[in-house]
Length: 309
Length: 260
Image 1 (cartoon, helix red, strand yellow):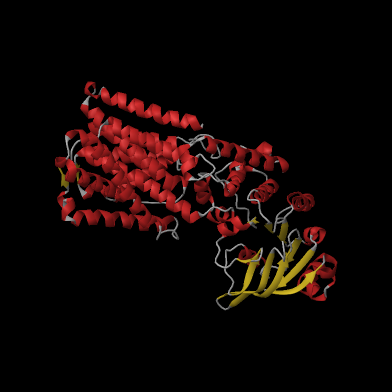
Image 2 (cartoon, chains in turn blue, purple):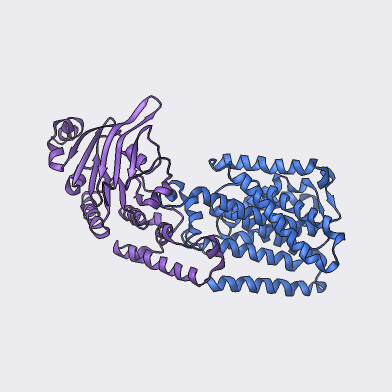
């Protein structure tokens, strides 16, 4: 599958660029939704590495996203006027990398002190951490405080978003589908046994947190340059829960399922717009029905042993 | 190698007011098959957990290949060459039989996170080598036909064997078996006895067997140490231990009474 994985990556990026070049032929609303979908795919697949594969129940993904989003946006706002227009994509890429890196540092900062915690306890601590980040942005004048950050240039397009999504899928799938990466699942299944087999559970957990947070940060950066406006309210714990729902619905640790769930759960609220006031009730109801009928994940077929990409 | 492979020097561990293991001296040579027995609650599993780094001794020292193991975590001990199985089987439940062994083989694989992402030729060859090693091990223990099956779907005896295979895949110098005969019937116990002897000869390693079942221990161990209330009360050949009045009183006595 090795070369197949690389081929997937190149094909996906090429497709994203082609679609993006034709974007003037598409409805702008649909294009916007497609970018929302791509961002949520990045968030869900990266959270899946932490929650699904490694089994560390984190509720702080929106926090990592906020770190990345604000960093990328601030970086662009500071440099925007000072560099010639041709440097724009460079600033954007540098900003995304910077945002991802800052989020990765935040992931490290959460990962290290919470290593001893499991399950519910870890969930509560990461939830608290996400809220702390949100409040920091909400009170810092340099980041627009409660009013938010405005005037962010519109640089995110279909190609950037879906190339990043393809890269996220590539990284997570390649990691897990290797002898090295089976360690993540071993930590998920039984930490004590994993330790006895020479796996360092601490290192694997931190790695998962750092990589997951990095891509959440990139998603935040894309989000910032897509909406052109950042407010702290957009990164509250409900956003984290949205992402967790995608992971659970897709089937913990199942990349393809999680992608499909991210696509569905982004499109669903849009498709239900016709129901106006009843929209969120219907949305919640559908999630309840799905969880009741397919608790093992929407797209989990066959036995758990057949772990595919 | 000079000196014993594993050495416990006056090891004591207390949990609050309870002294679970008290001043135990004990050693295992390079290719020895040693049994550790004792009645329920005698401290066998505690000794086991001390050797595998789950607990740190309150006093005394544990040396592996001459090196003190204080403050080493279980994954570091595995790297040194100590592998174990668990009393209540702890296989990786969401993985296949193949992947359970593959995780253990990873210990000696030079390919880390960067290779897994770059997927160059070295990595692909490494993965193929890992695959060959896993399949060889599985074939030796007749588990090859189950390779794709979920580990927890195997029959009980096979799960126990898979756990041993997984431990062997870390290429240990010392294999610790924690009550491998628990829950087995007589036929399975005979097969297990043969298996342990086979492992010791084939892989040329030392085995420490913590066991309740006298039939298994007496049948294969070269030397037996007996624990009672955390104190080592006897040590020697199976025949010697069997004849020791303190052992009979502490352990065998009960069993003999039940049998009569």
